[in-house]
Figure (cartoon, rainbow, N blue to C red):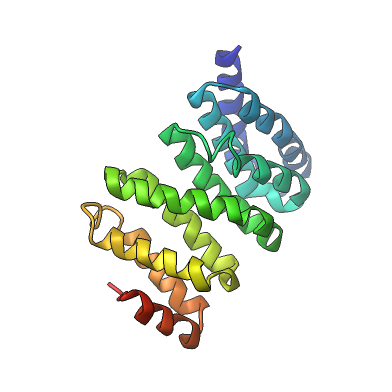
Length: 212
């Protein structure tokens, strides 16, 4: 059964990549398929199948999610939880982080209820990826953090801003530094664009941070 699901999900993902934006029926059918994809994420014990399902949801959300945000909201709730982002498998974690970054672009303020769990796990994975020199997990974590800065910059204050700056500094000092420099530089660039000097500079001073 898992093999069949794997083939079906890969086929749907490929279709989502190729459908033209003007094809309303195909767009609607793909978005309507999202709950079925999320059922696989919830019910499967296979990391490979979970990763394929999350990638499918990511592709549909990225291209057509704004046509039905309620389905994407329901999907984001599952992807940000223990069945996806909270899994122990590295590939599932990476794909979940990237998928949530896409869904954030669709949901904007509606993503806010998911942020406590998302920040907790994402910051945990940033620390872990530094310890284990895991560039894929580190870059995916930065991708989601950067998306949050871009779309919900007012969230970055106090402990959240301090923690993100501290992790960026740890990243710069780690063995990962060169491999993740682009993601980290984008983080700093996004902060300078989205936060006022009055918000940003005290935090930089407070955390001993400096831009690369």
